Image 1 (cartoon, rainbow, N blue to C red):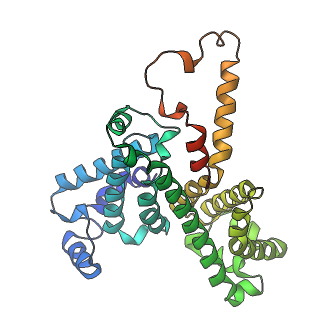
Image 2 (cartoon, one colour):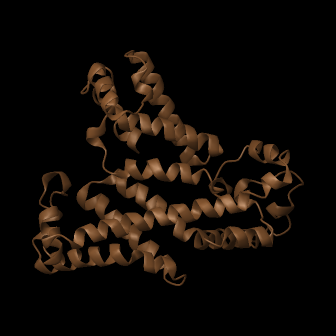
Image 3 (cartoon, rainbow, N blue to C red):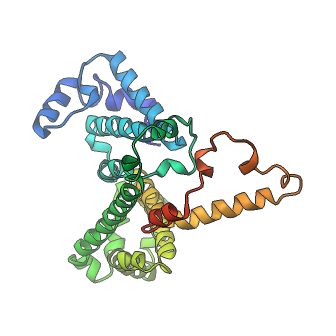
Length: 309
């Protein structure tokens, strides 16, 4: 989304002769002590190569292609383009910096991914002790992402409750009147209604502070995740923070992983029970490797991996 939305203006926003000239960009990197692939040369050709390589890598990650190596490469490209123009980032970049390395610990490519089988063939040649680390590392990665999301909510909520506008229930009125964070024709309907302002302000603080408690209770976890997704969809629409909202929604899905897995299993079972398909189910189609979305885990390993999901 980030690459495509800026594509027509890419040279103006990120190019060596654009809004931030290459020399000023190098000075900025020197001050922050970081790196960016866009800083290696002021060539327009190099810029186009890096930009389009980053776009294709992001597309591959979205489609579930490339595995952990693809995730690592995506992180490098994403860091580079965010550093190239820090004036248009919206907070989703900070979360991506932290979460993508944590995802590399997990087996997130076991579902909804296009698998070439290369990773599976590589794993077959690893020692048994190394293979045994897969489940603990997966659980560690899932737990780390969950903790990170909870920290985002709690810290944000605790900062808000210290503000007078959040305490008296008027914060939403002022937020939606900022031109950069408004939806013309819709925001006015919200901040023009006292009841919606009060409810929205207090509901936001309560949700942020108590979200971790909803996550800790298994019965409430799916509802907490759905509420969080709705909350961030509202942020995307009303405030225009689309990148941040989509990143948070993607992270919230980790709390729905078990529910999604059950839905996928039920859908697969319904497909096999469909008339004309029961004779040749996919699971008996042949001895070859199955797609990653159909990999069956042993009960012990499955229980280990679900201890946090």
